[in-house]
Image (cartoon, rainbow, N blue to C red):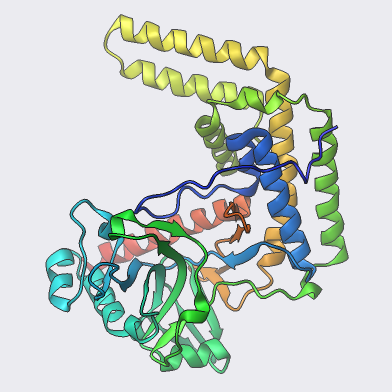
Length: 406
């Protein structure tokens, strides 16, 4: 019998040479992308987060995902020692590095709003940044972004509106600061910036304090009282179902998902948007519909036949291993249910209130980083789908308002 939680993990760390952090998977999606090893990753993330919500010690670092904009890369250039700011374009073959306001105007003059934000970053971030190191963070507010309603201060850097009491610690910091930022990534390595790799381990203790910069710590500060006995039982029920199912699965069951990672995840996301659940039958329909649409665009009979053959091979593979797909998606559902419990508990351990277009909602989610570097996203997919719907309504309202002005 295989152990669910203690499956041996032996994965070499991957270098991400001069690029932002790689695709961040939902905790339950690890089983789609990494098979049995993914089960261990998911279990470690879920059980570590469960312990953290109880106030127990864990090797996971849990942080809130903030919905800021723009995302800025900044720090002291490893080769010349000069402070710079920029967007992800700093990683281009011909990097857009901004050491001066003139550089910002030349590199980003086509986007006036971005220019203003980068100038603010260039002026204020050196006041807190360690003298060695390159970092990335989301800008949250500058003075013109902050609104006051009664005793509440709020700002909307992207989709979510963040609110806090004006006399709270964050409220006082917002009032006094010239810029707000959440630093979430550090770049490490020798040589040029293009040779560096991203890591989520930001050494926050090396940043200095300055009243001009509201340096928001995304670390989740846990109050165990927020994790109710009813929620704990719901988590244990979901995990128990996952463990029982996994014990019954053949050792090679998840291996049959190899090559289906991207399409299976797409099917899962499609069902979240539609309010349903992923299934083998649904996956077959998803891929058949996709293949038919692609086939309609092909001009030659030869190309169409090749597409038919490819679909036929796909259908045979899924049919031959239907039980494995059924069990994998059921396991995925149980893990997602367990994760949703934890995600909702994390949402109660927040410094800010969240809303979209005036409608109260939760934070974007959270990220769990294990000691070995494995990362997992904790997002309530149903809630996130609702947030996307609200975002669409908000964008439509803005568009209609703009048309009225015209």
